[in-house]
Each structure stands twice: as C-alpha cells, then as structure tokens.
Length: 267
Image (cartoon, rainbow, N blue to C red; front, side, top):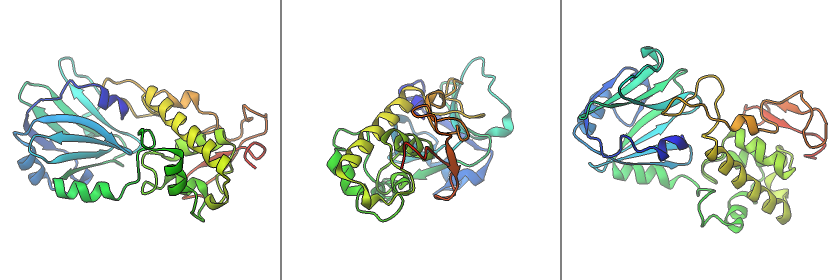
C-alpha cells in the first residue's frame, strides 16, 4: 500500500473510461455510477488512511481502496504483462493511454466511491494515525489503556488507532513483551509507553519494506513487500523465540485471527 503513495506516475491523469470486471468489490456505488462520476475526472493525489489507499479526484469524490490481503493497484503501461485478466476487478483507463488496474486474487478487498460528505462520515469513525506527529503516548494511552478487552483486540480496533493490523499487532506486542490476551486496562504506564514506541517502530519498518507479502501481494511495480522477513513472531509458531529460545505458541482465540506469542517473554 505504501508504495502506491510514493509513486505518482498516474497523478494528474484524466480518466477516459472505467471497466468493472468484478462488481462485487464495489462499495457506495454501482458499476454505472462509478463510470459516470469518475469519467473525465483527474487523479489529484494518492494518500493513505489507516489500511486504505485514498485517491482524490478533481470532482471532489474520493476512491477508497481496501486491498486487504491480496488486492493491489497496478500501473498498466507499455510492456504490461502482469498476471491473468480474471484477477482484474476494475480498470481505470486514462486519456494518455496508461491505466490503473485494481487486481485481487482472492477478491477480499473493496473499492468505494465516496462523496465529500460520505467520506467525512466514514473517516470520522476512525481513530488517529499512529505515525502522525500529534499521536503522542498520552493520546495512545487515552485511546488504548481504559478498555477491558484483550490488548491485541484493542490495538487492532480501527476506531481507536488506525492502521494496525493483525501482523503488526503480533509484532508490537512481542517487542513490548506484553501478552496479547491481557486486558488493556491492566497495562502500567511503563508498558503503555513501551507498546506505543514499539507499535510505531513496527509500522515504520513495514512502510519502509513496502508492507508484507505472502503469496500474492505485489506493489504497483510488481515488487513484494519485505516486512515478513523482519517478523519475529508472526508465521513463526512452533519455532524458538529469537529472544529467549522458548517455542512460540499460537491461537485463534482473539478475534479469530492467528496470534503468535512467547509464553516466557510475554507473561
């Protein structure tokens, strides 16, 4: 996702046509309304909000893309040779002959078209960005530290903190030496400070590595995200903890998502 933000090859391109191959990925619009409202608009800016890629259009509308596990925005240009056509959900063709494709192997992601009012309503339900300069440890403690739910659940709640998913929650909690199932309200100030610091460092590392790839995800240039190579616990269940040597355990008890932790380091 982060790679989309840093590569502006389609910025200021004007949409000539829209072709929807997989209507089930659409939210807040139909294939016809998407084509009607987007055609003739210029892509002004790409940016990120939480786990979403946002494209600002000259019309005032915004495209909100949730790639999930396998979705990607691919820039089509001379020499295009990426993958099978059946993975393409939407094609935005531009007047200069290039195109932007939203592809999704498992079709878990979504693409929404939002008016300014709808976008404001949608964004208002999200928590603050953890990498923003105004996101201090006091802000983090206020959003996180009073809940009786498991700290991992709270950490992934996008209404409290935007952008921390399952992989990065696992990693941050291991780094901070906090058991994922522990109630958030029981964390001490020192533990909250540690978790705040480690969460931000994990996210910064993920951005620098272009995210995380398993089998299918690629950035717009076809590159894999490299964060999984840096992971200390995620996908390493059954292996020894790199910090203390204890065999890492795993469970799906929290939010039905895989949780991997060290029973010694994260008591």
